[in-house]
Length: 223
Image (cartoon, rainbow, N blue to C red; front, side, top):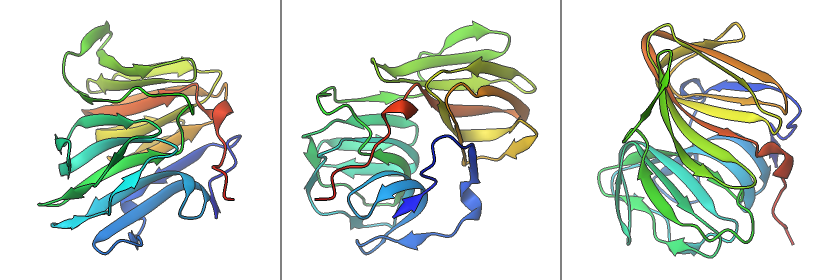
């Protein structure tokens, strides 16, 4: 399966407007944003766990990165409330679920094979004032990518151009980018060297943003 697999093209999806599709696990639905592969896939998705649902125990051969958007995500390592950013690198394993239900934004098979850095972080804690109505923090940085959380006050603009491409998810509020309106839940991917100019709406905006990573995009071995 291929979905939004051309990384030279801009993609904007208002995720709350697309239907949920059932996953192979009962009670777990997803909205697919991009995908290369079948059930073992390089994938970016929004996943919804119904109360009491869970996946069976599994190992992340290609790594897993996720944000808890609402509710509390759980596994044998602890509880992860809304606003938590998590990196589970290759070779890590768990049994994920949600007693009360939750929604997460998740990326699979997008780690460097040798990455072993596992952590969780509150995205909106200890933000630095970056000036001109912008605050944020670096969530993760390595040779392949930089991941940040950015908060904009109402009407504030954030501009940059990244050689390795840009991907962002609007966590709260609304914004405009290139003439397009981005509602809460909007997912935007810009190709390498494409400029980003995003302006927050009347209530401000917060977003997760990853840059530099698109040159490394490839599908897992399906053999």
